[in-house]
Image (cartoon, rainbow, N blue to C red; front, side, top):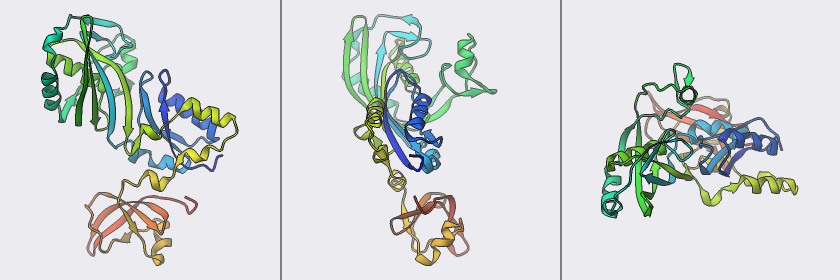
Length: 308
């Protein structure tokens, strides 16, 4: 099945790294050309789009898209890793009566928009060539520079008391690079309590949603039964259908496929934005909109072979 090309939307199970999932998909589809579009920690479940074959050329575009998560924040205890897997560092009983729906909704609203986050020590961020989680495992804590991320939506679902702790369930839609663990810690700090992320599930990544995701175990079972797994791949044109498309004149098809720039008469697009060029239903490539002396033109970023 090494000629398979497209995006496989996996429902990642807990206990596996994103790299583990990629390794499994390489074996199932018989190709080394496999890559995921955004790391999920081992304990996190949910939507993990994996690009197969020529679709690996889409990774940089898909991983930049917003993500949506279902989150459970636990008030009352902080951990070394900022999630439930880490050693408990601090505990404090929570006054549950003070954790009202109105208060939490106001707090969530105050976090919307662009915020700054300090990456957790247990993260894959590199500082001076070393991963932070490697330093953390050595017992080293270093200063980290804050990063700007954007929170587009925060919706409260439930507040549940559990002994001296309180669990707050909410949905978050955010830009790439947002640490849900750190968000939970920061929300807890704003409420005056130690906190950590108890549970996390990704329910959307770019255009891909959990309803279309197939559990990895089910995919492997279908492969064992002899089923053709290519049917589970989202085609390359469909995977990037969130980008505007433009039909190329037949006489320009060969030039575009050879990577040459082409004019965009009648196109209303922002300079610097991405656009897909098509010949009928056939995807020719992903192009960057540029402006020249004669108006807008498309400069090739990725050109796809005819079989795509």
